Image (tube, rainbow, N blue to C red; front, side, top):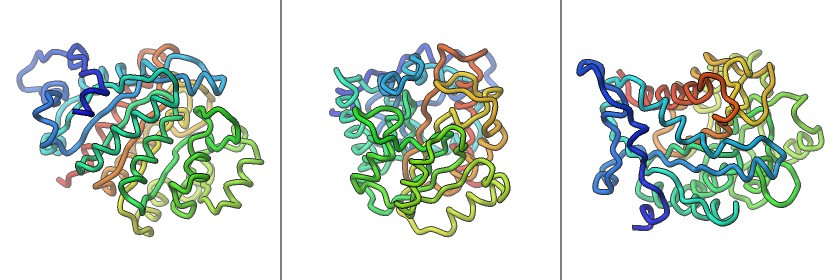
Length: 312
């Protein structure tokens, strides 16, 4: 009962309503009743928490991200690959009195789901939730491949914890192996050289946006995934890695970054190589979005990931 005591049940208004019997949408097949959890392959959980962003001097509003991502996701068309999977929406974490309490609750929920052999998709919220999400995966599996796809390193050496500190927490607490940790898509102008030196000393793999494009994004991710042994994969997708033309609804926007086609290609590869793990989408801020563009893109990324999990 722990899982249902610590979460608020999915708002069914987000599922939408069908109008064409020949055009099935995601909202028509998603499961959310407690008796269906055991048979689920994939579980979606939201974390409507943005106090970590505020601590990091960012813009408020990401707490509304899970609802708007779902609203967009459940309007997308169902395909045969997704139909073959059982997907359960656990609703949203009941946030704690402090950010730290929310992290503890989320870590416990994700850990329980992983122990039940579920693949977990987490919708944020601030990027600070990478700490409890990845820690939960580390609690369950010791050989974890970790990707931070982000404009920022998120290894700030400051207190209290915030949206800029999660990967430093994970590294310093020995929850992730630096040699299996990949910082992907960062840009030099958005990061202190002090933190870049810290990551190099640790032995972390660093691929800037420019380096990713030079090597070929799809080729690079395929090479990393095929060249490493692992029991599970953590995908941390901070939507501020995108150029603001494609994702204007984030805490920190820039005109440069990955474009929509590039990030879709990454999630397609991720789905093919992640039988077990956590996929996390953070920093979607509907309060500053334009035409729900960022929520819609995140929904497409979820759809792409799930579609590619099963071969044609």
